[in-house]
Image 1 (cartoon, rainbow, N blue to C red):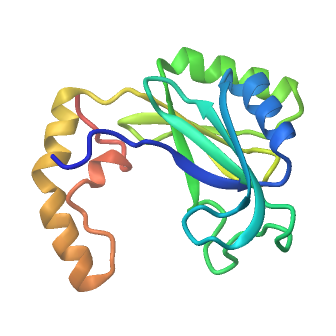
Image 2: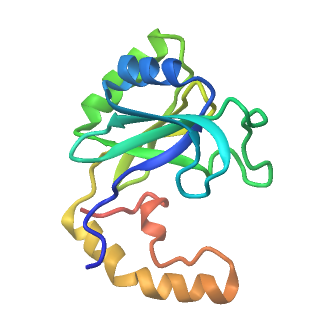
Length: 178
């Protein structure tokens, strides 16, 4: 395999310091690195930035750029807000529920938990307007095998019809089997 792991995922932020503090307080992510330049190394464009890196666990790094000389950040208005998000794994449904309570106690609006059959999730926004999902796996090996067996057929049918294939309807119709 060419890729060994994700090196980092980068998003834009409104305020680097606020972002570091928010992710540390609410998601226990440690601040691991800051890089700041007045010129973009890859393009040589004069564009001052602060690039911050946060430890998302197991070698995963979540990074942000603060870009003070650029127009205010915004999101893609042609894409619904629920689509663009970062999903982060937690160790259990119990951790998911406890985190939801902690976030709500801090005044953060949380949607969920949502039952996706093979995992349960909560959703909320960071101070930059990025949608985050915390997910706890709960699918069985049999469920994962069933999904693996139909993935290519589902993709081919979707490609032809642009309608949701029914190969895995069991995930949402209440007939999910262990």
